[in-house]
Image (cartoon, rainbow, N blue to C red; front, side):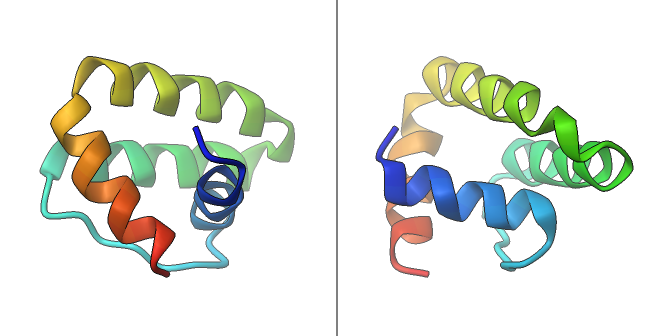
Amino acid sequence: MDPQIQEKMQKIFRGELKYKSANLAFNMLITKSRKKVAEDPGSMEGCMKELEEFLAKYPIVAKVDLANIAML
């Protein structure tokens, strides 16, 4: 994953940046990761790994949403 997108995803997970996907599953992942990171900031690495696994499983979501996140 591009370092710039990775940084933006971390900001999204910390709640510093807002993003809403057209994909419900991706939105659920974001919400779940936000809660985890809010409760335990040390869980960011695990959330990023889960994100990478999700995007590897659903490459179409990755293509569309990562392009949108890059433009934030």
